[in-house]
Image 1 (tube, rainbow, N blue to C red):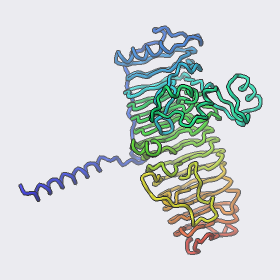
Image 2: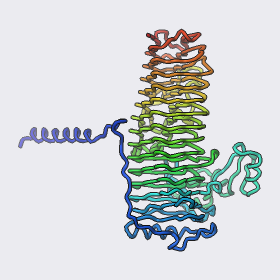
Image 3: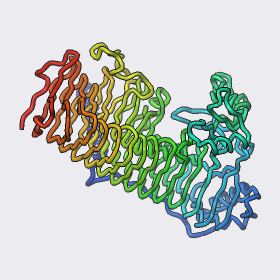
Image 4: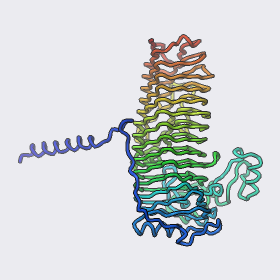
Length: 551
């Protein structure tokens, strides 16, 4: 056989493989949603009473419950029953094929004795880090569940620092009287001297470079655990239970597949430091529905690792459905980021309500993260009493943003690398917000603008209107702004191909302010601009030809 024929044959095989792999990529839509597989269990039930557990609120039942879980798994699985009563316990370790069922009127109370939680190598905010053992954990498991109508309480107040300005005077005095350490400036309370040492020690929590878990023992109390941590697990069900009062994040699923969260209640105090509701990190095939989150930080949050470590992992969170949930008082209702270095895609959010959150829909990243977030579909979102933005796209999380400099044409541009994050292809429909500081903020990087954002059929009753900064291909259609401060209603800076189609608004002093030499191709369609006292103001080098309008 000739060399030419061999080369041709190889080329054909490679091309065929390319087409095959492309054909295997699922194209999801509202009509074709991703699916999450559910676990199935044997009917066999083991009551923890069989292993000597006592519901007296005094007996530490760690050994009894863990023995029941291990025995159930060893027999091929089934249900481990936590019956009615108050069950004091230390850390519990899940096993494959086990459904931990917390009965109605059962309170699974984790101890505040920190010596019961050993230091382990864990993961926190996208990095490998020293943590205390989680109250409930599982690694490399298949077919697991936590169900029932009972309560799981993480005793978080024993772990968390508290700022004085987040308590009433009576609450503060009671907390100080309980023990702990008050900061030198009198503004913060810490649970122990060990916590303070960790706070003040550079490199506390680092593993490697000669540092071991034992080296971190002096700072043990500083490494607050997430309450429920499941790592690299398949076919996971969380259903019906209340998970509350976590030392840090309430639920953290990492590298999991086929995760279902149904009808759960997640409750953390509004002032709980890092008190996220649920963080889904580098997972695929996820359903979160019918649940309530009352959180001290982000409510429902999508993550995929942080910076270089997350990019090396290379596992996006993908194929996610979030529907029929209510979120109270969280920093963000539904959130992607900021640790999203592995990317996120194919996410469908619908029929959710946000009440009293800092931000409604929150998408955050920053330079150095990398990662692409794309194919995000959102519809039927109701919001009330939002402290800041109803919808926020922000690529300057914890950094200096455009607009903070007087010269909008001289923003710092950084070379595009794998560490440059990307937001694109978001589709938002039917958002109704009754009360927020601002309706919409889109804030990209000068080297990597936010692209392809579609927002339609939405109403915003807010103090301020919209900012579009360093963005391309933005499309707003059938949007009603009811804003109090309208000088301007819509601010556009260094953005291009931005279309406003059928925009309605109340009394407005200035409809548009367009800034920056990079601003171009701004279109106003099917909108009565004469209702505004002033239609447009061009500043900082923006050309008057930038804006075109037609009815």
